Length: 100
Ligand code: FES
Image 1 (cartoon, rainbow, N blue to C red):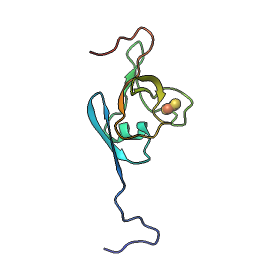
Image 2: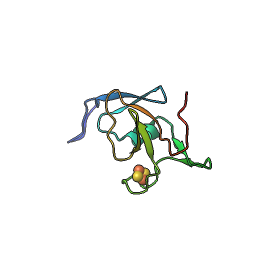
Image 3: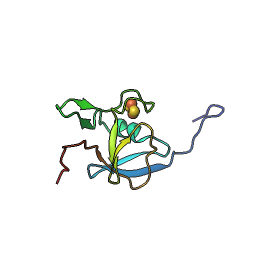
Image 4: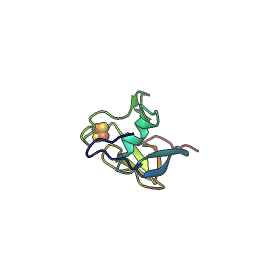
């Protein structure tokens, strides 16, 4: 198989993390939001009235994509690169109880 000039033929490094305890794998350099989308998660939290939210602006403006990362809530998934071992969960707002 031939390659094009400038084509990267090396396999990208993979990063292993988890979402709600399930494995989440993505290429190094992917944002948390990109990793969640690539894993088939179009939405990863809900509003207080149950409406699904996930990636919207993708540039750190709208806060629709917030998640909890390693216990820290309110993290914008579109702005944070996925790191090895991250434990990601839906972000909880005031009055929303932690899952068991
Ligand atoms: S999608 Fe809007 S802040 Fe992340």
